[in-house]
Structure formats: structure tokens, C-alpha cells
Length: 387
Image (cartoon, rainbow, N blue to C red; front, side):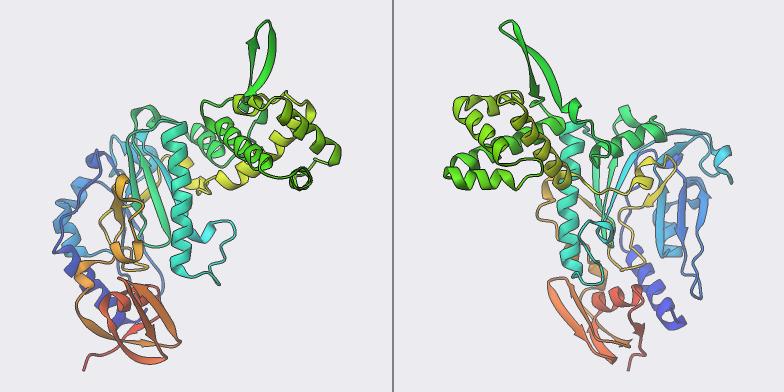
């Protein structure tokens, strides 16, 4: 980044911070704070091991320093400003989840539109929230758009604050269905003097597989016999014989599926449940970044600040407003709306922000400031002299 571009962005970030008031996280005085300034040259410098006492008044600090990136720790410490981690005296930590559009299965950042990537990431976020709210019954959740390629979720329930890294990894493994115990989805119940094995329909992965089984069985009933057999035979491990067995079991005991009975119909139905479990775990998992969640001392972006790689706002989202949230519109800083600037580009670019599509060509272009800030922060444009 050249000097003119860096100085322009630093100045405009400062203008942004002088006109807002930031909301610190809970227990802000117990957290470590860090930031990356607008360092000349190509490298970056992380300034960390600071406490809230070191920063002073947050609004004043940000207005005066206008950092490129800003963070606070998920952890709480007795002495957050200590210069080494061992001297900070760890108390507890939020459980933090990170979803990055660049790392989603099936997403190629080189060929996928930025807006499409973020839409796919929001779908993954909703799957993650289903686990956190339904399976774990967490209540104190904060959802945040990261300001660039994804979303963060901060869980602050007291029940998780003292979990160590290994316990947090178990949460990750559950959400990502890593080494999922298929037998754990099934329980044995007593029924009129006999025992039978049924899916755990009351919640968790068992409930997800059961929902898929009921839907699948309903679809089969709407087909003629040949089409239903062919549909079943598309699944791994189910040939014509097992397909006939499954269809016969569904016909003889239509209530068995809704009860989650995996033994009605013998090994054919059990094989169907196993195949559907594979499909459900592949489609319903949330591809979270494991190191972020398992790290009990992680620094995470400070909501309300600007992301130095995009110029977008790291935006907290009310849970009820998640469906309507559009990061390419709602995370555009008001301070960068309403004026045009001149930038220089080496290649054609297209930016969709604030409800508008902005195209630039090689050379000098006049664009809305929010689009120019976005391109310059990403290293795809330079600030041109104003006339």
C-alpha cells in the first residue's frame, strides 16, 4: 500500500471513529486488547498485551489512533496487560466460533462472487446457531458480521466459561460431526415386555436423522413401486433386495418410521438409517474454524470497529434481524456514503455495495467513497490525487 492510500484510509478511519461511540464487551477491564496500526510498507505490526487501563477511554483511543484492525480477547484475566501469557493469570473465556466464506466446502474464492460467498456463509451460520441454541441450549449469544468474509458467534453462558481447550474441541467435533457416534443416536426402550432400538427423536443428531427418515419415507410413499425401489437403490449399501425389504416394512408398519423404530424391517431399515445419517451429517454440519473455538486466549474482532481489509463495519446483529441482514449494505459505514473520490486501478473490478453495482476500469476512476475504500483496503486500488 503506497503512502497516499495509507494516509487517506487512516484519516478516514479516524473520521469514522470520531463520530461514533463504541460499546465494549462484558468484563472489558479483564480482557486483553490488541490492534494493528497503519504501518508503512507491506508488513503489519500487532500491538497487544494491553489492558483497558492502558487504552484509556475507548472512544478517545480510537479517534486518536484509528487502528487498521482492533481486537479483544475471548479470555478474562487477572492481569490482562501483563507482557506474557503466563503472567496474565487466566480466569475464563467466552466460547467463540468463526465462519469464513473462503473455507466453506464447495466454495472457490477465485470463481465465486463475493455476495454469493457471504450468502453461503450466512446459511452455515444458521446451521451453527441451530446447534448452539437447540442442541446445547445456550442463551447468551452475540452474532457478529466479521467485516470481511464471514461471521463470529460469541457464547458467554456461565456454563462454558471455564472449559479447557479439550472440552471446547468436543463441542467443535459435535458441530462438525467428526467421529460422530452413530450408535449414540439410538437408544433401547422397553415396549410391552420386549426391547427395541429407536432413534433419539427428542433432539441432537438423532432428531435430525429422524426428520430426514420421515421425510424420505413420505417421499417413497408418493412414488410407484418401481420409482421407490430405484430411489432407495441410489443409496450406498442398498440393493434391490434391501429396497424390497424396506418398502415392505413401511407398508406393514407405517407408524414405525414416525416412532423412530430402526428395527422394524430388519437390517434393510437400519441400513437406510445409516445412509441417511451420512447424508444429514454431510449437509447439516457447520464448517467452523476449529483453532478459533479451541483457543481459550483468542483475540477476536471488536464489534463496531472497521475491518482494515475491507473498510466495512464489524457489525453486531440482533438475532431477530439475521434473516434481513445484508452485509454488503448494512455493514457499509455511513461516514463513507454521500461523496465520490478518485482511485487508480490496474485491472477491471466490479463492486456491489450499498445496493449499487460499481464498475471500474484500468486507470483513474471516480467512484462512491465506500466502493473506493473497499477496493483500497483490499489492495485492489490506490488513492488518486483529487483535482
